[in-house]
Each structure stands twice: as C-alpha cells, then as structure tokens.
Length: 520
Image 1 (cartoon, rainbow, N blue to C red):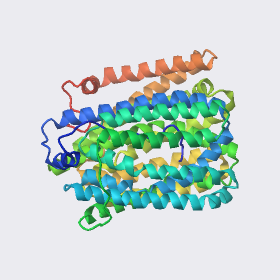
Image 2: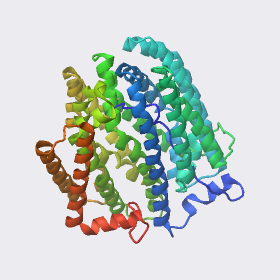
Image 3: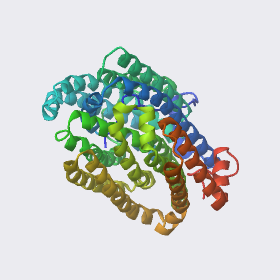
C-alpha cells in the first residue's frame, strides 16, 4: 500500500499572534469558547482541504510530466526505498506532537518537552536509516537502494521543525498559513522533480524532490508559526502526553505493517517493472484517501477534541462527516474504475498501459478504505486510543495475510487481496467505533445509501455509453464518460435527495448549514 510519489509528501500554518506566541498557544486551545465553533471548523476545513486540493493540482501536473520522462523501473526502485523510509517515519515522534491537540493542559514547558522528544527520535531514525541502507539493498537485490536511502535520511532532521508548529496551529483550528506553505512546497517539489527528470537524473529526481519539499516546509512553518521554543529533555510532568503519543506510535507501527506489506512481499517476487506498475497504480488510487482525507482527519481530531471537552455527543458529527466524505470519494473511485483505460492512456501514455486493470481494480476497494480511515480521529479525541490500537492491529494482520495469498497471482492478485481485505477491515473498524460514539449502523447506512444509489446510476449510464456511444479516442472517451457520469450522479442526488444537496451547497458557501463536523 505504499503508493508514493516524491512531490506529494508535505503539508501545513496560519496567522495569529498575541504578544508572545507560546503564551497564545497556551491561552487558546481548550479555553476558547465554543461560540462560533461551526464557522471556525468551516474555515479550517476550507483552508486545510482547499489548499491541499490546490497543492495536489500542482503535484499532479508535474507528476504526469515526470511519469512520461521516467520508466516504471525508476518507480519500482523508489517504492523500495519508501518502504524503509515510511517504516522508520512511524517512530519520528509525530504522534507525541499530536498529543498537544488532544490534551487539556498545554504550556511552554510541555511544548519544550515534546520538542526535545522530536529531536531525539528523529536524530536516531536518521542514523538508523543511514546504517540500515546496505541491508535493505541486499534484501531487494538492488545496490542503488543503499545510496538512495542514505541521502533520504536527511528528511528526518526536518520533522521537529514541522511537527511542532503544525500541531499547535491545528489545536487552534488555524490552517490558513499551513495551506499557503503547503502550496509553496508543492510548487518547489514539482519544479525540482520536473527539472531533474528533464535533465536526465532518472530515479534521483524522485529522491531529491521530497527532500526539497521537506526542507522548504520546515522553513516555511517555522516562519509562519513565529514560534521559537527551547527543547527540554526532562519528561517529568508530561507522562500523559507520552502515554497518548506512545499509543498512537504503536498504532502507527501496526499501520506501517499494514500499509507497506504489499511492497515488502512483492519486492522479492515481482520484477521492478511490474512493481513499478503496481506502486504507481496504487499511488494514483490513493490520491483521495492518502492526500485529501488526512487534512479532513487533522481538522476532525481538533474539532472532535474541542467538542468532547465541551461534553457534546460526537455520534451526529461523525455521521455527517461520513456522509460528506462518501459523497465526494465514492463517485471519484467508481468513475476511475469505469474510465481507467481512457484515463491511463490519456494521462500516462501507452508505456503505462499495464496499469489499466490494476487501477480499475484498486479503485473499487477504496471507498471501503476511505470509510475505515475517517474513524480514528473521533475515538482518539475521546481519549479511547485502544479502539485505534485494535483496528490498527487488525489491519496489520489482515492486509499482510491477504497480500501473501495474492502475490502468487502477480499484480492483479494483490488487487484481489484488496477486494477482500478493505471491506473486512472497514466492517471491523465500524463495529468498534460506532457503539462508542453513540451511533448505530442503521443511521450510518441511511447517511451513505444515497451515495451508493447515485453511484449505481452513474455506473449504469457510463457502461451504456461505453457500449453504444464510444468515440474510440481515449481523450474524447474520458471527457464524454466523465461528463455524463458526473451529470447522472448529480441529477440522481438532486431529484432524489434535494435537501442534502442544498445543505451541502450552503455549507460550501458558508450559508445556513453547519459543516460536517459542526452540527447535525
């Protein structure tokens, strides 16, 4: 599940200053009134998610050009390094910074203690990756992997200077400057990747682009947050943060087993060419769940935490969030599954035609995966990290077993493993989450049923057009089927659930309706 690309690895900062910024961080958080909460959440979602969309437009414009310049083997090599980098990144201490969002008590000392932890963890991870690089190269049978990993170790030194300011700003639901930094970093990464690929650097363009993004993001967030803090290496008085962050770190270890097991397993049994096709297909299908849902979850954790501190029930808020997420993600994935051939040939070219069945198959599993991913913020905000721990452990067991079975049938075998594992993991996660937030499966079904029906109508319309009204040109077929499918989806919602459409439109225009995390 390591669908990664070098120019889509960074995000985050907003403005606010009242005298000393550390004191401002202390004063806002839990002490803020819930008055105007809906507007603050709406603004946070708009800036965090909206700028993420803009950053991804920049990223994908560059990605399509870079993919045409490089070979599938380049992406296969890069995917191998990402397994190691992602595995070690779980231990970078980001979860301890996240604890600042959920905790009720925050002051300068506790912030300094988290900063000290971040410096210790990331310095250690950089050293581990540098020393482990030759062993990873031996495992994959690719000597170049060692050099790539040694250079990528520098990324860990940027983490303390991004995690701390971004989490403090998230606690206060301040995302405007974070979004501005994200877009600037996306542009820097895109220019770096495209320039190096054009100059013939091959796989190294995939290595240096994320490094440029992480360094620029660290500088940008540090300036945007205007936050200088002295690291404190004495943990006394911060054990609640350590416990919360430690639990999330353990969850992330299970997550990395779940998310990287396909590449680890396939890396020794598939050629770099086939692995490159699979990893890039996965990257394409994970664009929504991997790039657009994390910003929603960031805002969600902060909003749910504030609501929980105000003793408000979270069930209605979660159900509305689930409805909004599925309204957006499900038609995208169903549409991608229906138009995968035209999309790949138009955007990537004949060289990547082998991705077509892989992309189409993976897209069908992603709506279940999206629903699974949005569950953890609500229970984490309640301090019930054991739910996240259990679902993470379930994923770390289910996914590798499925991939071990599927890899013997090649890339499509991995796709079939997704078909089994993603719905199963979604069901387990919902069964553990819904009772704890006071929501019923029937209530969730009522929220997502209109989306399922509208997607069904869209699929029927597109399949009919492909059978009886195809142009024979990938570009024309993509535009025609995309327009027709979107029109049928929108019309089904408009005539079947007009109230929900109006509520969503009012939400986007800041009129009347509360945001997904604001009110039922």
